[in-house]
Image (cartoon, rainbow, N blue to C red; front, side, top):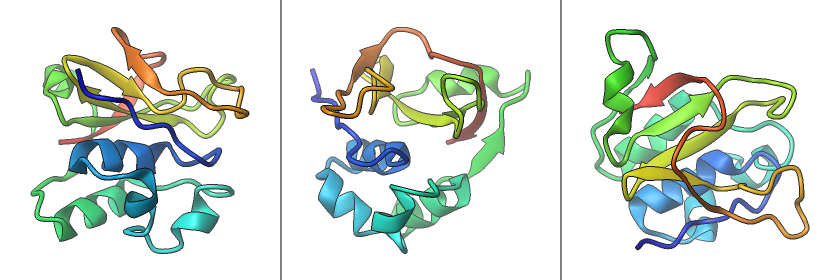
Length: 132
């Protein structure tokens, strides 16, 4: 089984998902994002930024709003989803489909010291965007 990658900043879930997909370290992945170290703490990342990084690494992808027509496509390994902002996830949260489960870069949220990652059978919220 693949090892999960833990996000290192409060808004670093996108970085950890990219690291998981590219099979690189979190530190290597964050260096691929413009302003990554600041954004992982304060702002977070948009789907467009993830797509830009993945395309630079040779992965042909795009992001889409999840509708009834494409909802079943999120279960393909390698798909990154953004779940809806909620009380538990005030900025939303990214997870990646890996090993036929969901790799969650911060599975013990809200604890950050230490943050832990792991795999879930089900998404912890409603997915609204997917990077296919």
